Image (tube, rainbow, N blue to C red; front, side):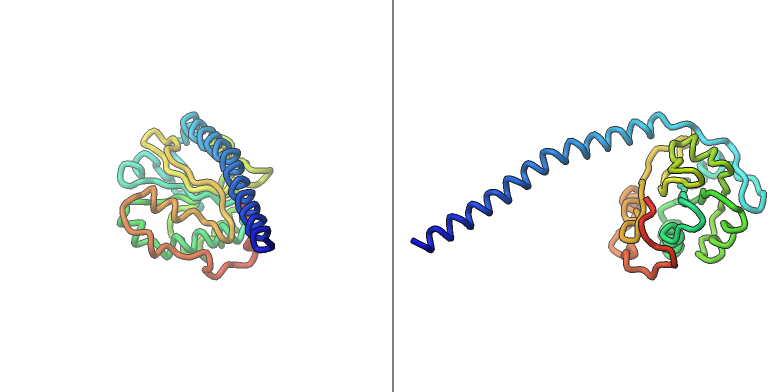
Length: 208
């Protein structure tokens, strides 16, 4: 009799747990779908970037020429003090040969000051052009202004019309988005994408 009571209690707990998971999934899935739909709509309505930007050395970057030659991606930095953002660039720098094979090229967009952006470029070994977003004009244009002096961490591709056609948002010490990038590129195995355990720089943490 006691065994039956224990079994019934166990089954009841199991049923309650399963029911909780079902209810949770029913509540969360519509929310995730709504979020995905909203982000897709934001991408469709995004404004076009200027035809020309200027890098840290005051050299012009012709976006139309770049996007004709390669698939052009932007990597945004939340701020110059964001260690996780610097880690993202280190990870991508180590994957440069694979990214080249996939036809990808990059521009890094971040708040200034310019001197600190130059230091990040040197420290991370990410040799692609960096652009200082003065006054966050570009971030605001793209809907990526996170807070005063901060840009939402993201990776996004732009079209020949210089508009966003794909975006991965958010970044943390355990989530960098490079796996999503390789899945989107769909040109090579993603089994060797760096793990989140890569040695972080000082200041690591949540940068969403």
